[in-house]
Length: 222
Image (cartoon, rainbow, N blue to C red; front, side, top):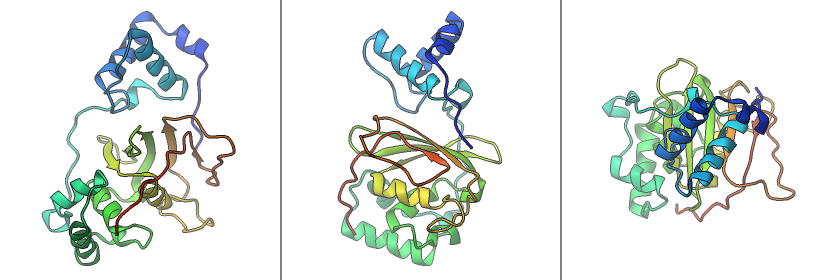
């Protein structure tokens, strides 16, 4: 499912009140999940870029509570938080490895997922076949913030991944059948990526994914 981009003229055609709502949402962080700082012109430029890229206020991120998985299935909290920052110790990774092997839901025991990515995804509490779309926001420090929209409705799931390596593991769960890895998403999930401009010569092989950016993955500890 392709994302419908818009023209700058479409942005200019919005009412002043509508543009103000986009700009305000960019400034508070409810538009993309990250507060946009800078001069008024810089904040407006970020809001305009989001709109032109296909974003809309309906996708702006609210503060509804996401249902948590049952206690018996939850990953170790401290280790998971450290993993999302790329700072998990070897001992914490071992703890997550035991959890993934012995206690994680079946879909998180997938061989494509490392123990830290599986633990981070456990907070999504939603299997990949129920993911309608994923919005990806690459951060300057190399981390990746994603929002997963459910086909069942309800609040978006926000997840912070430590690097692009972890992001690729997540995206592998929704690859189009017939491509490497197969995919629970059946090609029905689409991914929108916001952030840095595509580097020259950088292409994607996933037909249902349009990528913008190529932040370098950091070294991951096992």
